[in-house]
Image (spheres, rainbow, N blue to C red):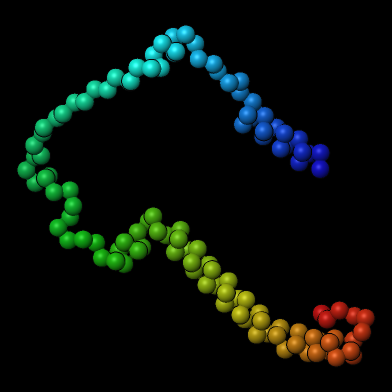
Length: 116
């Protein structure tokens, strides 16, 4: 418990440990003036053949689905489906045994022992 409390205190000191800085006179003088902005406009023609950044033919649904950035999401979905299958299978195997024990327990045949 002491370790957890000291970890929380340490984390709070790291987050809130810095001293707040007050504005100096130089900052106060410039605070009421809007910041200076510079805009540069460049007109440049695209070289021939490079004007269209998009491909002529869009990628198909499956090529986008199995692109490298979607692989972690797909693997998590597969793991979730396999987990549901394993839970269903375990329930199918252990279900009759648990049902039999529950009937014994609730009918009063086993008064002082938990259903296992």
